[in-house]
Length: 286
Image 1: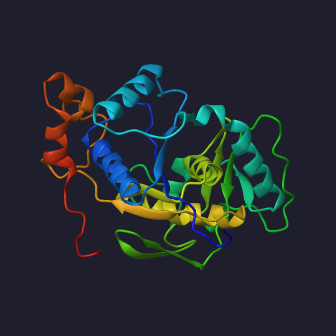
Image 2 (image 1 turned 45 degrees about the vertical axis):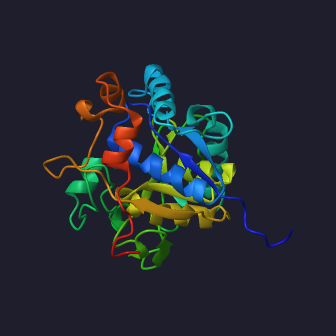
Image 3 (image 1 turned 90 degrees about the vertical axis):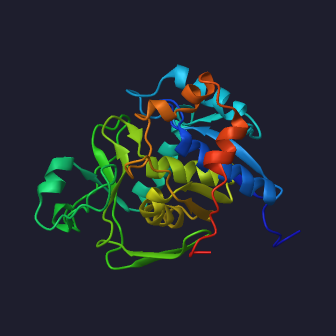
C-alpha cells in the first residue's frame, strides 16, 4: 500500500576487534527490545573493515555470546569486508558530485593547526581547518583504481544539521563549527566508518539505529551523506553508555566485564539481564 511505513528493521553492528562486553550487551539488548515491541526484526552486521585488528575468532565469539544472551537476528550475518564494491560505488557518486576532496594532511597536522579544536573523545575527528581545503577552482583528481590518499567530505559551512533522537530528543549541530570535513575513504583503500555505515543502513533497509550516545556526533555527518546520496535516513535511538566504577565507559580492555568472561565464571544470562540490561531508559529526555 503506497505510503505505508516500512516494517521495523534494526541491527546489531559489533566490530570483531575483541570480546563483547556488558556495554555492547546493553545496547544490543535494547535494540532487540525495541524491535520486539515494534513487531520487527534485526540484522547482524560484522564491522570488520579494520584489517589490522579484526580477528576471525572474535567474529565467532560475538555470535556465540549474542545467542547465549538470548539475542537473535534475521537472515545471514553481513560482513562489511565483503561489501567493498557497494562502498566504492557510493564514493564514485560523491566524487562525481564534487562533494569530496583528497587530503594529504595527517591527524597531527589537523590537531596542531590553529583554530582546530577537538570535537569530542579520543575516537572522534578534530574539526578540519577550512584553509586545508583545496582552492575552490582546483581541478578534482580522479579516484584511481587503488586509492592511496585520504578523501574527505566537505561539509556545508554554517548549515544547521538536526534530527530528533528517539531517546535524547532534538539534536542539532552547525557544520564547519561543531564538526568539520570528515573522512569517507582512507589511504589504505578502505571506506571510513561514516560512509560504510550509511551505505549499509540504506542498502539493508534499516529503519532505526540503536547505538551508544557517544555516536551522536557521527549522526550529523551521516545525515549529510544520506542526503548527498539521495537516501532516506533511519530513525536514531542513542542509548546511555555503561560506565565502570571510575565513571569510564566500558571498552574491550575491560576483560573482566566481557560476556565470555562472565559466562565462563558461571554468571547466567538472566543475571546479566536483571543486573545490567534492564535499566529504565525513560529519563528526562523522555
